[in-house]
Length: 397
Image 1 (cartoon, one colour):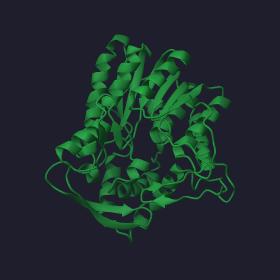
Image 2: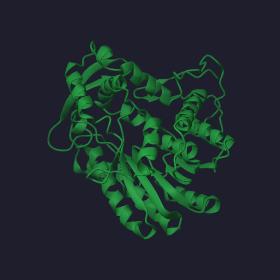
Image 3: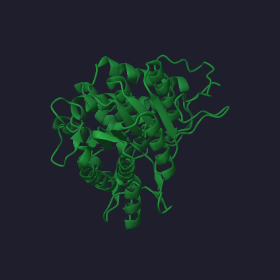
C-alpha cells in the first residue's frame, strides 16, 4: 500500500515501516560512531519502543553489546492498516540486533499488569538469568491498577486555585494562540500520580528482586523532566510534576531495597524533546520550537539517541562515577537549562507571534521531528513506493 500521514489533532494515525526502520538504523549508526561503552550486558527496558526507551535499548545493545529484553504495548498491523510506530521501531531494532549477533526479545502488552510482569520474569529466567540494568520509560495516559482493578487516567493541569493561561502553538498550522487550563482537583492529582508516578516502577523492581533476577550492583533508571519557568505552572508544579516528585522519591525507596545487592536506583532528568506525549501538552510545542532554534545555533541540540548515549557513556557508566544534583538526580538536561539558553528562550517567548515564530523559532524542525516519530519525512525513503505494512517483530515472545 502507499502509506501517507493521516493526522487527527496531535496524533498521526498511520506509520511508515521503512521510515521507522531508517530512523532506527540512523540511531544505531550514531551509537556505533561514538565508540564502545563499558556498560551493561543484560538489560530490561520497560517502555522500549519509542523515544528515550527505544534510544536506551539501542545504546545498550550497540554501545555495550548488551542482550536486551523490551516491553511495550503496540498495535500490530492488519491488512490495509499500518501498525503503531513503536511496532515498526521494535521490528527494525530486533532485526538489526539479531543480524549483529545480539540477543533481542520482547513482550507486547500492558506493562502495568501482573500477567506481563510474570511473562517477562519467565523470559529472563529462561534466557538471561539476571539483569544488570532496568530502564523504566513508560509513557501512558492511563493505568489499570493490577491489585485494585481501578482505571486511573492522568490529566495535565495546574495545581492550586488559579487557572493557567499562556501562549501555545498549533505546530501543524503555526497559529500562536492563548490557552487556559483550569486547576486540577485532588482526585485528578491522585490519578495522575497513580499513572505517572513511581508505584509501578517499584512493583517491577520488587518482582524482579523477589525472583532473584537482579544481578549484584544492578542499576535501575527512570526518566523525568523539570523544564523552564515558562512551563512550570502547567508542568513541574502541576499534576505531572506531582507525579514526577513521586517518581523521584521512589528512586530512594528502591535504592534502600537494593542495598543488599549493592544496587542503586536513579532518576535521569532529560531534555525537552518532540514526542507523542509532549506534542499534546499546551505550551510545550512553542517552548521546544524556540529552544531548538537556540540550541541548534549553539551546537548543543540533542535528540533522544544523543541524550541516551551521553547518559550511558558520561553518567551511568562513567569511569568517574555517577554524578547527581543535590536531589540525587542525574541531569542530562544541563545544556537545555544553561542560563544563556534559558535567558534567550525567555526573551523570544515575549516576541513569539504567528508572524515572528517562523523566524525566531524552529517550527519546521519541530514538525519534521514529529513526522519522524511515525516514519515520515525521513531522508532516503521513497514515500511514493508501494510498501508492505505487514511487518513482523522477529523477537516477539
